[in-house]
Image (cartoon, rainbow, N blue to C red; front, side):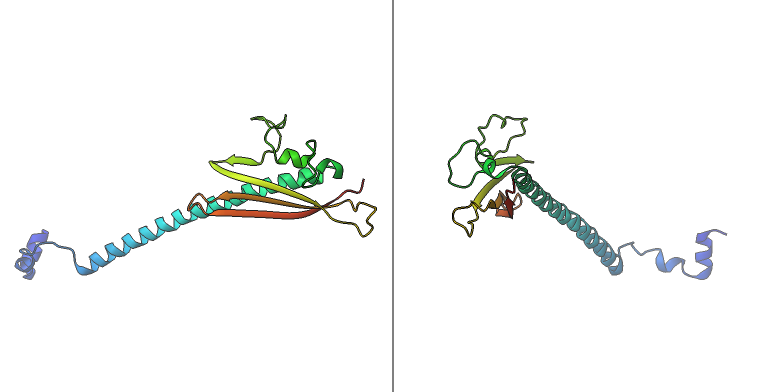
Length: 171
């Protein structure tokens, strides 16, 4: 027995045959809910990519600060220099200049402005002598501040990372 014959025998054949098929309110609500869920998932993924970018920018700044700190820790006190001494043959002078003999494109020198993935990071290093209790003897202690500044790539607001450490010349 076919489907049509079963409907005619039961008496339902004429009741539904003239109705047009349309979406019910429940079907429309379910479709709308599914669209909202897909939108929220897409928005969440997009926001996580923005967060990953911000974290990567901070990682770059931390790397640049650590690079400067490790170079200073590896040097002797007289090789580091201090702010305002004006010597050109110090590590501090190398950090403040991009014209050193090692500051070529693929060199290992230190430059004040570094571009990574289209973002410019400006690194400034300050070294101050810590005074000794005995005025006649240098304490050998230096206060080192490394500040890395860049502009956020999302809204161009300035962002700053600063690391402070001490260097003691025990040589």
